[in-house]
Length: 393
Image (tube, rainbow, N blue to C red):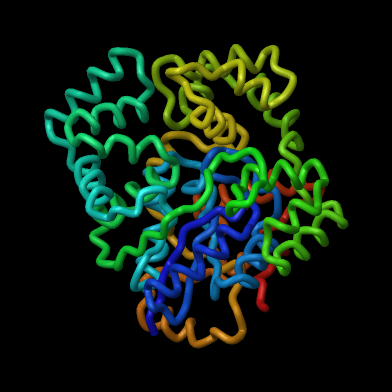
């Protein structure tokens, strides 16, 4: 059995995602498609609009054969560590190939950029330092430095999906993985704010959902995924972006200076900026907008805020280099033979029932806490990690 893996968020699932799954299966000549999906919080720090179970059901109804969770300890990270967590799970499950969407499908350029970032030479390191001394934030400094060292490659790091593509290739290098690489040209913009004729962006789709513009939402999603969404909305299971604002502001206003400095990716006084903004902000959005600068971009601050909310520290994340288990969210009945493949090739424990896992494992305790905090914002009881079960269609 040939298996291709995909790393995703599906926040929520739309026609672009269905296109990618179909292309991944076709281009990899795969018998099965396995997805590793962010669980309850996303890479930029936002709470997912739907539960992991509902988003997994969407994926299974539109091309995926099995879906596993990427826990918050890796999901809410910069692109490098997000990719490392997802690639580690796919490779240790025994996937033969990995597929990703990218604005730039030139594998030679992507591989060249990945090798430089993974093993930087002195010229590149000096160029990064020079750009940061000029006031650029780290991601922009890397892009400018790469363009100086490898003309034309710096643009890869200015596009979100191409940046992730480079990070997936870095993860393959770091982990010594031999999976085939299947890029799929991305159609449409990642942050497009309006739903148009092209394949939609998740950003635009979430906006339409929150406005209740169901005609446009339906046109942007596979029908089965839309039905799952409408059922969740009808039963009050949509997680609105402001739902955890008060909890976050309470947490930030009661944190000590040591609490702030223990957060991941804290440097150059960014924690002081976040703490000061928390004293007057009335919402998460206001907090982030008033804190961001050219040096401290929105996404970095958003992740910091979510790390504070979830109680994730730099020491904790440093002690969790890669996931210790694969949390199964769902699978298709007609692909049960996939589990024979896992039994033969997987080197990672597959967790199909949360209650059976060691609750003292630090990453698992953190994941259960993340589920409970997300459930609070969705109006659901605590214990969601134990009650949602595995989705089978």
